[in-house]
Length: 409
Image (cartoon, rainbow, N blue to C red):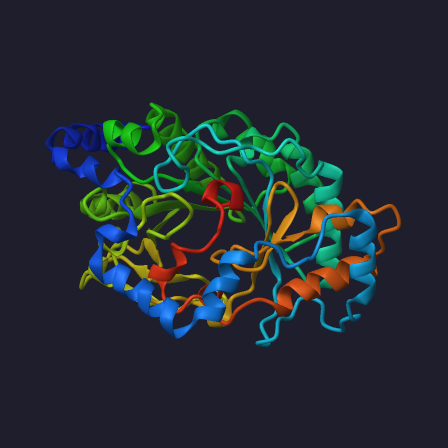
């Protein structure tokens, strides 16, 4: 580790002793009944939109059955589409996020319930992942992001990256917690990886252990240093650090995270608004709108990508800092993303609990490319205009959705 990174590491480590002990109290799960305003909103939604609300609770799939014969009969009734990846609002989806594994070597409080999660024993094989990826590329997808769980736990990850690289997309990215990234970092880059997002929500080792329920801060830090070094040597590689900001937990660390970009000029820092998922204890009081984190010395920077989810700013030193504003200012109108979970479920929206089992379709004995087109198009025609069909972020919490670790970060 270079001396500059050692100095910064030492300074943030010492600062952990000065934190407020009360910060960990926000990890306790609270029900919606403990918040009168949210409860009133929920009751109002039930009165004003009873049909929609009950439907969202009942439907967890956009297909009628998993039975092979009935599934075939259902596919045959679907219309043959023309523009496969365009939804009913005219949004074209050229960005596929591939979750490769459900397991994770961390237990982050905002991602995984304290009791853990039931894992599927029937995930997509690498051959199936690459076949579906090739199909999506032939229909217009040109950007991939590999997620989990923790994607570096997938033993055939290098082979999957190589297979995706052979499809010649514009970008192959990975979102990782960084715990074991250093073991095969160069191997992944040589295979075709072009973008690395490393999740880190605190610069304090003891708080890291509270947030993740694991003592791996040093390993993650070493991955950030190694990835930054790789980015400094290879112009095509971008490295970002993602931080989920939670009020009373790590919001006071935002200035230190921004200073991190001064130590590591090839690093981009992004702050993510805390989002609601199944059993993660979300409520408005813990969400920090990005406007509260802006300072006068941050200058807005336009993004060349009209579908970029990040609002970018430049620091006085020329570093790049971004904010993902899913809660305070959603970007659903320009959404170009679809997700494929590790167990083969196609999700057209992060906040919609409904899914289509693309794995079962792919495994039909006589499946054709046309069959896949029909099912993918069918799913996209059910994509809602914004927030998975919810009127506001608070109502997302009551949807029948998965924990984030099963959806794919």
